[in-house]
Image 1 (tube, helix red, strand yellow):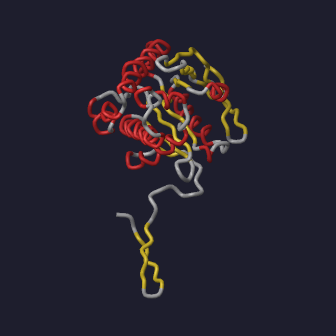
Image 2 (tube, helix red, strand yellow):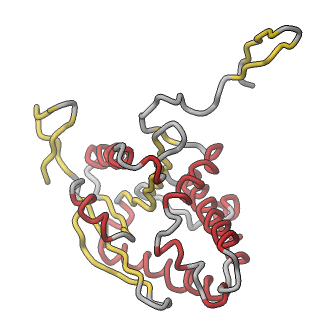
Length: 257
């Protein structure tokens, strides 16, 4: 139980509990446990509220009669389940005083496909919450396309690379360098281990941003069951070597191996 301190105000004694959330002034990257998956998921839901891929499973003909409020709740549920699964089997990092930016990573040799993770994360609930067309898009198109493409691009390194599954910042927290810190926190780890990194970007506008972090575009794939194709850009970052003695403003310069 968290320690408390007593504060007397007249005849009333208040208990001031120590907060379990990070200090409001912190801008350090930290790893989340399952106890904080809800806050992280809601942050990602806000970040991806109008993302084309996120909407792809909701904007179906058989959900045309449902309200936007209902669809957003389902959008939040999807990210709750995915975030919980990454807390159990992957790595969830955040930065900012209120989970302002969040990244979901799957490290080498890990996945969220086992039955126990599907059960305890709630991923199984999607089968009952998505519409018929939503299930077809998610289970028969989206997941196989991502799985097969990653295997095609990474080959024998498929299980040996870091996978950036989600990276999002709340609209109110953008422009503060949070996403950069989340990326660099994990690229440093990958570089030390000599491992590649893989991601799919659903926003073409972000391609240049990822290139600044040494990612290179390898392929463009598309989800094609909607009115128009939804593109995703496949990017890979090769492990970088730290150049000896080259530090400037606390940042280590890197060069390609």
